[in-house]
Length: 129
Image 1: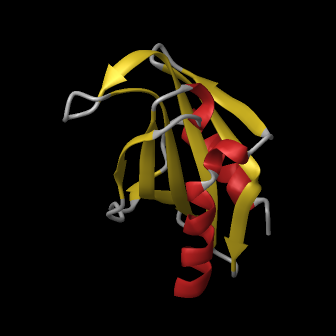
Image 2: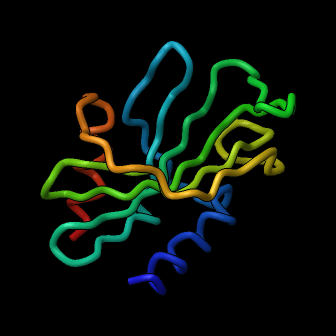
């Protein structure tokens, strides 16, 4: 499983090459997309998907560097309706392009999927089995 996870995350580095971003939610802060080309299902319960948040305005990271989009590698437990962020990259340009401004690679805690937009993202990822 670790090898597949590493393979999935290696695709994360070339995220700007994705051509099939599908919108799934819009907030006052960002338009959110997923990429089915990079969705991976493992076994009967786990699925991974790339999640792009294209920000409506320039934002600064904790070090004061500006970014316009964030790309998340997200894992779902399809049976328990839970998710966790595996890593994310803040990108200098819109739609996950430009230079990597900063990144976070610590695996997050599992949280319940309660927000409708995230539930749609989970459905898209979990249906890839």
